[in-house]
Image 1 (spheres, helix red, strand yellow):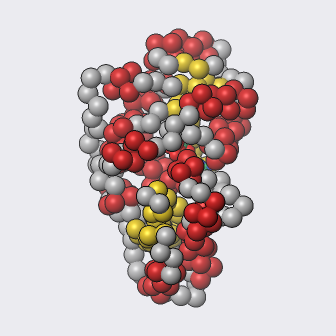
Image 2 (cartoon, rainbow, N blue to C red):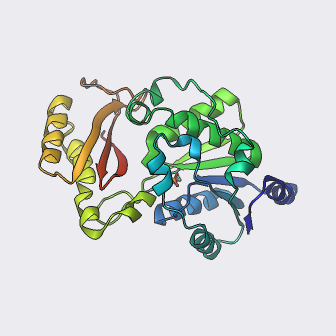
Amino acid sequence: MQVRTIEVLQSELHKVKNRGEIIGLVPTMGALHDGHLALVNHAFESCDCVVVSIFVNPTQFNNASDLNHYPRDVERDVELLQKNKANTIIFTPSVEEIYKESVKAEEFDFGSITQFMEGEFRQGHFNGVGTIIKHLFEIVQPHKAFFGEKDYQQLRLIKKLVQITKQPVEVIGSPTYRETSGLAKSSRNKRLNKKQLETATLIYQALTFAKDNFNQLSIAEIKHQVIQLFEQEHQLELEYFEIASTHDLVPTETKKAEVTYRAFIAAVINEVRLIDNMALN
Ligand code: AMP
């Protein structure tokens, strides 16, 4: 079922809650791919009813062109979700429905987890994410909410958000779903042709290089070699490649025993910005 207003959504959810059912929420910006469907199906493993929101959230875009070019195909998305599973409520609100007259982000203090990588290169982005998710949690009041590890800093931010706001939502991460080439599925991939998609697999190759060599090479050496890899590929511009401890997500060049690390990368091809990350140890 597709609903466009908060009022209709809440009256549907009221019925679901009265039946004692577990409600899951999967927030998306639409242009759905198999990674989104995997997330929805992950939610159905432990929820009776799953709300999938489709909302291209203006306050999390720090670049007007990126917002304007973001792929949108709500009709197809709705069809896909309806075919996938019954008991899916597809929430497709307008910007006015969500933000009323003030399309503005709230300011949060998420600490170090949002300070670097995406936080550094997309100023204001995470305040926009925090704003929309806090709002969706208030509207839906789900028992559980599901987010992809593909946007790892975002997943961590949402876990922090529920601590800050004391919203009683269990936040669950889901593994990154990839093409057979290794490239992470992304709505933004729709803006690339076959050749560009092939070129973009260098992002995945850089991450696997880091993982495969993490024990043997220093972080500085890994970074140096990744930068060199990208220098040979002029179509794909490396924005950042960082290795950070999973605990605080602060980029580092020193490895400590008993600390887990993750590599994070962002690169641009044909004006399309792609991100990915991978656990290293
Ligand atoms: P988006 O529509 O890009 O905002 O993504 C909506 C949700 O799907 C977020 O929690 C993303 O992390 C998640 N997601 C996007 N791409 C993937 C993927 N390839 N694998 C797993 N989750 C994903």
